[in-house]
Length: 118
Length: 497
Image: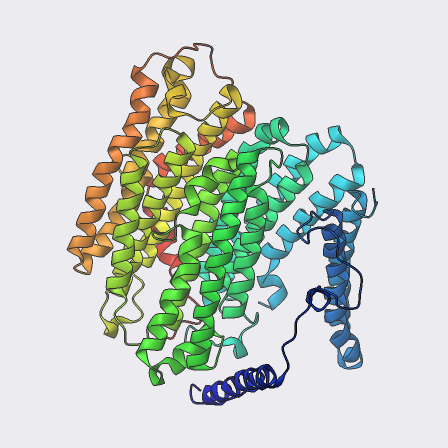
């Protein structure tokens, strides 16, 4: 078992080496002529305004969490849907239980006003 | 029995938890929630307890030899006597804490549905954790327990100390989980399996160093839940800031769960493996007892003092596991020490929840939990004062109480295996603990308080205190059934006997 991980070790070494070597080559070959326009964050884009460390509205996170509910649901339901023909009725009942639990979570968020933007 | 029936306790508690949360939002009615939800939580606890008793007689028929995941009714979970015992502890904790939380919840938070729902879900997570026989299941259940505990600790979200407690608990917890997962990955790398019984089968062929490292890293995760030294730093802050009923829950529930999973990993996965765990376990036990007791001496806040006291108590429990690990390898079926831990835990649960019930009553009345404010309690409520005396006698381990029986068995198991130094440390520590427990009692009985008004005790609170007092005395005075229960419970499925 442990010997099989040698393979992983060799692969990791290779994957680390390739980008480092490429970066080193690029660094050695490229001309270095910096000027203020080149040093900006987006060279041909908008001028950046203010600090990146600003406070986000906490509601974004609540939306993200509710989104994750559906994400997880999709991940679990896809393999279930693919195998549906071979599964007994029993499995369908469990899938429904699973969805009911998730819907309960959504209803909770809805009722608590997590879906209202203010 | 088929899988569905073996899981009835878990299913019952899940249904009640979701019913509580859903009904709370469906009603959207303060009065209705206040009247019905606590009783629904209580009913849920009782129903789950009944289900555990219903399954109990049926789990004796297992063949205990090499039951790996493949041939089991419920994959990844072992429904055996040990897990049922710990489930009983979890559910009793939820019931007693739920009963004593009523008034506190009304005073501090409008979110009743979430409080009782999460309490039941925390109970569910412990029930899953104590029967996990698979590293992945252990991790998922442990995270489930952790996340519910974090939320409950930070439940008073307008209270800065509660938030601070939750954040500290979360940061330490995240670190401990990471370290534990690293241990899991090493164990998986060494054996190629996540099933404990299969790991046990393939350990003989792997390197000692790797497995010792893996186990020590895993100990960080379990030790964090049990609050073993040196993974205990979160506990005093979390205990002090958390809502007091939740502190009571944290001091019993996650501790029992962590201990159960530690026992299961040790007993199921590691005996085939020729490493002497006794020195590691003994050292952790000695440090846990000593640090807990010595630091408790300096506390002026009841909740903080109880935090350190419960760290020390966890140390005593670990003595039992050290005693088990010291048994000669020829007697692998020997689970002596494990039954001692269970008896100790049973005694500790009733005693500690009783102390916390009194702390909650006094906090509801006085608004603080400083030990100085306990002065003159004897004139304000003789019943609570005497109850507190009984609980503290039990925590020290003085005869007519359950704590004595628990300690007798745990230290007895250590002496049986020739771990005299460990037992001696345990006894010394019990003597040290007299100082701080009796410091509180001195305040209660001999100091004069500024406030002389009698303490009002509600019906639910009275019930909790009475139950815990009766059980604390009963386990000592009529101990045979409880000793038998602990001995019967030391049966572990999937162990390679």
